[in-house]
Amino acid sequence: MAKHHERLSRKEVGKIFYQLCFAITQTKNTREAAELLRDLLSYQEVEMIAKRLKIAELILENKTYDEIKEILKVSFGTIARVQEWIKISGDGYKRAARQNKSNKREDIIDEASETNWISVKRKYPSYYWPELLLEEIVRSANKRQKERLEKVVGELEKTKEKKGLYKKLQRILRSRKKYA
Image (cartoon, rainbow, N blue to C red; front, side):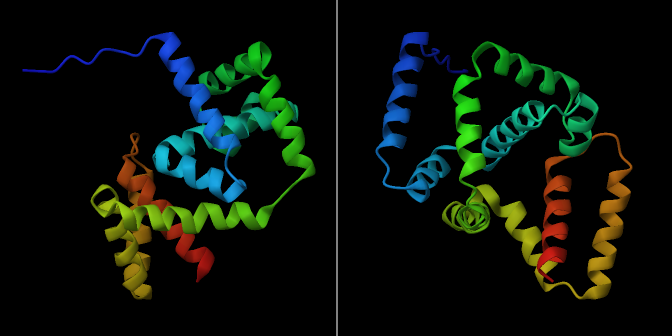
């Protein structure tokens, strides 16, 4: 028998959200804040938030929908939702974007994106086992085997629907090239 879970009320969601905001403001530095959010969010959730923020940044830079779609591979609907969000209540984001522009810290950003996700994958290996397995296969593959993997990815590229595992393999192959 399926269990029925009650949804949180708007009031409860608001209260918990502000508790999260308070917890973030109590962190000592950006690294602690990133650790807190990394513990709360899955990689897919972080990626989704990152795309929304990048869409907002590009909208504020007056990029067209076509340009944004080409850069981020997102739908026009997603871009429109973010644009509407900026119009209605984007003051917090606009303020943060201005602060980020004046305080670019690529060293923290690069470190946070790579090493932190590696530690999360190690902490929760059963959740990330397909990706860990693919990384190990790519890492240990010789040149010929890597070429065959790239050929498989190329064939999968032709299919209409892209599965999560395909996207992970494509990302892993790209990242290995970058560090090779």
